[in-house]
Length: 138
Image: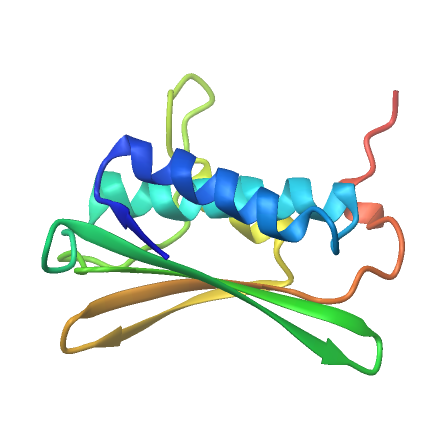
């Protein structure tokens, strides 16, 4: 899908992803997908140039594997001077944690560049049960 290079682009992408995948993806996995997509689109709006036409391209793909369903999210923008990277965020900072969220929820993520811009992707392996590194004791 194509969304505007604007804050509303993240909302449109989140709602469409949730509507399309809700019938086929467990709710807990869908919440992770929505959170990661929101971060990737938000980062594209804040830090990268738009594609021609003032837009960002957003896609998701589900694929079968022997262990279950793999999901790939991809956000393509016009690129930026410096590629995305995880940075240390001051505890008092209002931002700077987006890629930490992506890294914590996705199985892996990365960046691909071509002559038109860059794509930031996040891949989710099949759900095998609770991730011990994300369990919060209460």
